[in-house]
Length: 89
Image 1 (tube, rainbow, N blue to C red):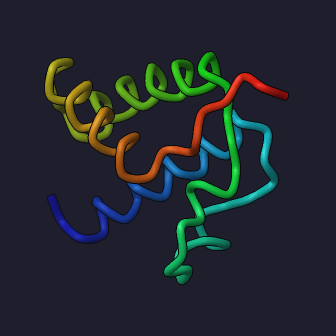
Image 2: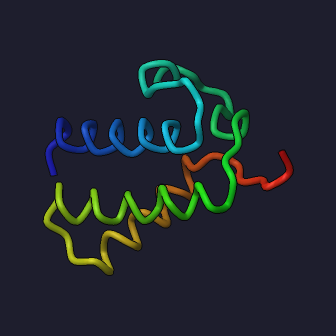
């Protein structure tokens, strides 16, 4: 995968995560940050599941990956960059 393709994939996943979680934030807002930005916003468990499901479909389509690979990559991406989940709101 080329760097441009990786950047498009990461940007798409992060933008959709913020959209589903209902936060008015974009990839461009956090790309230069070195802090734990992913812990500063939350999403519900249902929103997280929706985002992960969307992400698997997105990864399968854009990268032509089989479902098991897309699920594995999405799990890693969620672990590294996924927003903190909380149903206490």
